[in-house]
Length: 87
Image (tube, rainbow, N blue to C red):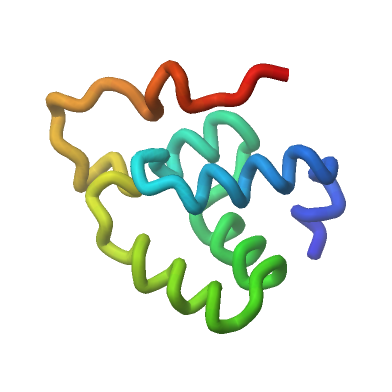
């Protein structure tokens, strides 16, 4: 897949981690890595076991916290300040 080849191993790992996080919207992934929701879905499909991918898709489909358009306007952040690991 072309998208994956342009990402380093650590970037790919971070995209997958962000996609799994319930409160990180796809828009935050797009801002950080320039990947659309459909590109993230393709990455998850290719990097995960089939059963894990289906479980993930079921979890994120229609989830308000993963889609800014569905999220409450009172939430103004994409993630918790303590969420990211220090390097």
